[in-house]
Length: 297
Image (cartoon, rainbow, N blue to C red; front, side):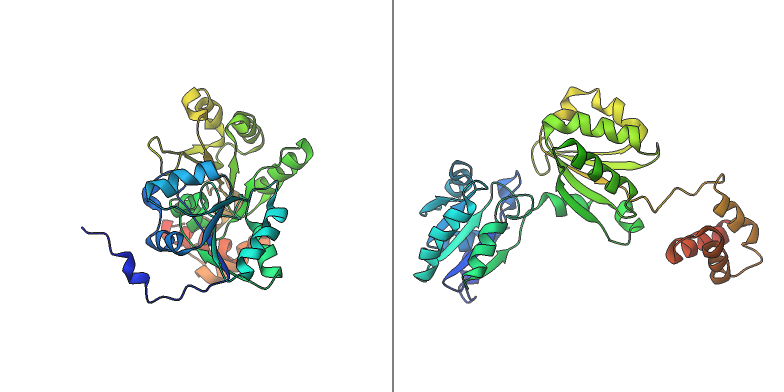
């Protein structure tokens, strides 16, 4: 199969005096989009989080452009210098080290500064550890009807860290977050201490890379998983299952009542009873009523 020619983009509009915010591979250079490559060849210069890192990508595709480092420590100051280039009508791109700029990466302050100065910012979508992990969440996302919250990297201060854990544990929707390898064991042990044993945690390790690994663990399986030192290496993304989808078993009182009444009441009426007696959400009560009707009383 031949790769489509970049000439396909020739008829598209690429405004001048604009900043192109480009998502780049999170580990596999083959994940770069054709549109991103076309724009990187088109722009007058490239601002990036780390020139050494971005040069690996640019050299791989034979792209040579003037480069400026704009990272979290100089983002505002360097952004003001970039305004001179945009004022001259130039097109510039911004790359973070991996993934989508501004998403747990530098870039947000630069974008804000460009917009405040009246210049256009154009997103060029592409690889993201966040969306990659969500795309394989399966049952977890079905249970939450597609809703989730994203916390990025967890706080480092003890009080803020514990508060973040509390919010995740109590949240009725799944939480996706990142954690650094040197904090990984401590964070996961804390989860195993606080979560109900059946609560599930999805772990994505080294996504898109040679040693990519995916795990789905119950809270009581976390300590055993941590015993393997190979599990603690690499870059990680996590999804904690939401708290509103409690496992329905024969020992749960709402489920027992639903079974008893399933032959006497319609699904709608049974749902109303469950909402009234146990304070269940409408959708949760109706799903439970349907399950009881299907399984029999």
